[in-house]
Length: 188
Image 1 (cartoon, rainbow, N blue to C red):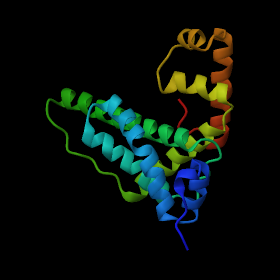
Image 2: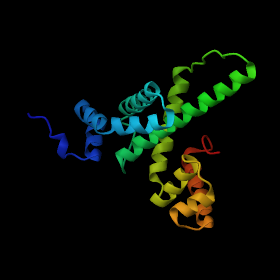
Image 3: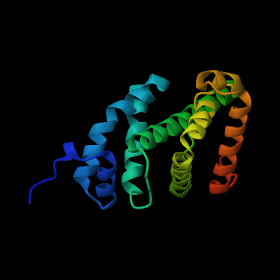
Image 4: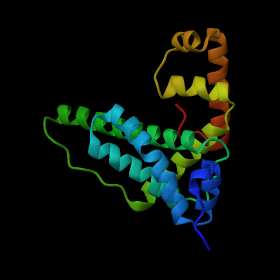
């Protein structure tokens, strides 16, 4: 039996093979997307080692949870969102650590999380990204402009050529949908 010609297979078809445990399809998805994901992470972090680690964590998580993760839209968008979420978590943790080190006047000990807490956080992250991909395109774009890019309502309105009230409505509706799907764990 010959190996499939992955060049002719879409990302979504590859993902279905990955969900079935196909390591070669997983490798092909990795090869197709790792560089773009690394560049996106590096652009925010300016740290090659951490950017590589984040991309690796996303791919490892996707492999480990392949049977549970349902991606019906764009695989690339899902992976970008997962990397962006991990980068934001890393930056938040680094910022908080730096702030408390300055307050304490000394370095704080490195805190490690038990595996079950890490897995719960990873599961929540995956659920968040899955639900984010289920939002209507325009709503998701407005929401990610606000949450991921930190744009104001007025900036989003100008960028998307819509009224500020429409931006407010889209954000409110996105939050309602995400809260309904996820509970109040993540939404602030």
